[in-house]
Length: 461
Length: 60
Image (cartoon, rainbow over all chains, first blue to last red; front, side, top):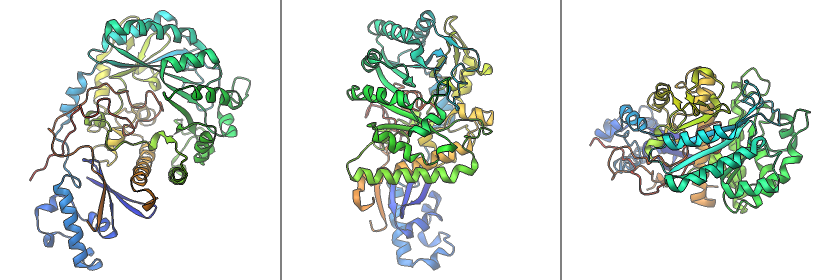
């Protein structure tokens, strides 16, 4: 399978199975529309090229064809599918232990964000904090279910996890106390809206959290339109200096400033650049996940604008990089040489299989986005119950079985997408949400192009 | 080559066995960063060079 596209006047070709990327001229670009791997078993003269033989010169066509043929022989173009079946993948995944856990330590929040998928923090089930016993039971559950996995991920999430900071702290200390005996390494992440950060908490986060996600949407008026407290006051002025302080003492550890864009700020590249101007260089801005009836929801009519804005952001990044102004945008970060293995690429998200979310009551859901959806309740860490039947459903959500994934050129980059989004919009964890797919593809095209610029420098940028 | 410039030779090349790799030590893809969408291409392998990369099988 081959995907080709034009961007900034360049013709880019992705060989889907090998992951190879080529820049091609117009002759090859046209010729690729007529070719499949099956054509290489016949002579060039026998291949049906329609009007192309009249449009392009014979010598040009022939030389282009033989370059394509040589790349096919090298396994870099029209490479065949992996010799892995859906059954192989499911067997492999069936043996996976649980290695990642989202701990919803606070079903409460000190903000009332308009777009919150957690119903402003309580997930529609009443405001509640997790007690330490439940948190310790969750850690124990993870340890018992983690099999031979060494690295265990625990995310403190909410609501706002810092509303329950004592439990965050004690949970970290408890897990750390078990690492040596259990031969495990806990990697902690905390997602925060920043309001409760102080020097002590900042130091604790920077000492203990392998990653921290700092929620801010960008420009003040954009952020404060969506992110405000119960009295209606926006969070921007309070959180920016705290986030800056935290990041300045991060000592190279991972972090993201993470925002959401909506229909209200389809010019979100300005928000990305604003965050960079505040001193942040690890930036993630995501399209809102929202019921389409909300006035800020991104709908079909916004798609062209959003796609153009991703391209706009990419071009701004190219210009800035030339000036030595570099930052990472989460969805444009690709690593062609050292990316994930094929198992990961065939099923990216561990939701409901390797990854679970736990509520303040200890109830288990497939991931943080499923929390509160009763039909997806998987058990309880206190009762040590777990529904392996539901787990099986998520194993089957992969690029072989998800609707449309097997024939999609982007499948090894998104790896089947987000089951929670599929369920939210289509009522089926194996039926991808079309608008999300479309945006994902655009981001991948931009990310590939940014990598090309990085490789070729000014010759392409 | 006159018509084609190869910029990246994909990670999945001929030369390795055709089987599933995966040590399972990497994070779930959205879980520790964006929390709302799934992208794996921005993740590094936890064991560079240690896991099996799969070849695309050629029929002839």
